[in-house]
Image (cartoon, rainbow, N blue to C red; front, side, top):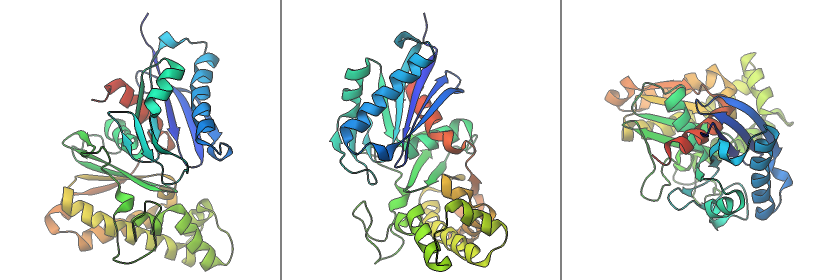
Length: 307
């Protein structure tokens, strides 16, 4: 009997998503749990194990139907040793041998990687970066993550920690970041920073969805905020474009739903500030796979077997 399915897990600061995918990366079933309800690392790991078992059981499958389990995780991962170094936005994780723990609990092959790397892998294989050999993908949410495809392969760096675009400093001095850096891009355009700016400007709480809708209706304050986010993001991309000379930049995550004003400002900033040769070639796209990119990327990781 051959393996027919892959279980994918996408762990974020807010949600723990699990999905069952076939070998063509089609999602057959999915679940979402709120991460905030798991205060301790142990209970979160138990929830991951439970999610995997449950999705297999609920689909009347057994372990022999499963090729493996792929996990996208919000922080630096040693993919070779299956080690979580830490999560900037989930406390209590430090050098956790998650692959070993999960393989013991589940008796299935386990593959882990950074969630933004997996989004990049998915967008390169099946999404907005398809057909481009060199792509930089960024996901904008609570954190700002990135993944880099060079010559058609995911570039991980010597400690498997490459692609941290959210931690490019865009100023010499500035706010301290959760990563312990200073003036990182994430401290300016992570969703918490955007919501704080919006609260100051509107004198009330505004959600990201409302902020995007207001900008769509040409609200001046909302447009001011998104325009600032776009030029800060564009500034970081200028460095990335000059350094890597990619042919595509893909922007995903919740913040990317701000729409036209964000993308226009990013493109303008790159055109104005990047070196001419690099700027001419690069195209900026919105991610195609939406919030499923991490799950699809996790399934690709299993199928590639760390390829």
